[in-house]
Image (cartoon, one colour):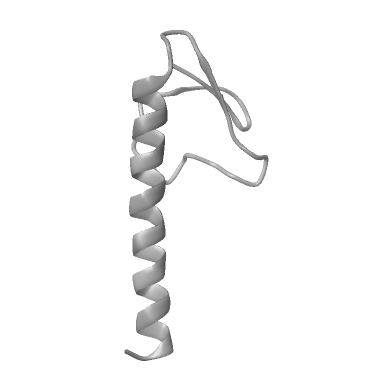
Length: 60
């Protein structure tokens, strides 16, 4: 596997893990609960049911 292919593989794996993590946080969070992420993080590239309250702040 060359370096470019390996990077692509890592990017795909990273996104799969992030998606599973966000799904699990949503499942475990009580209705009306808040999910805070770092200001450099975003859920925009992921499918989720959170409502965006402010940058880096999401609500179930």
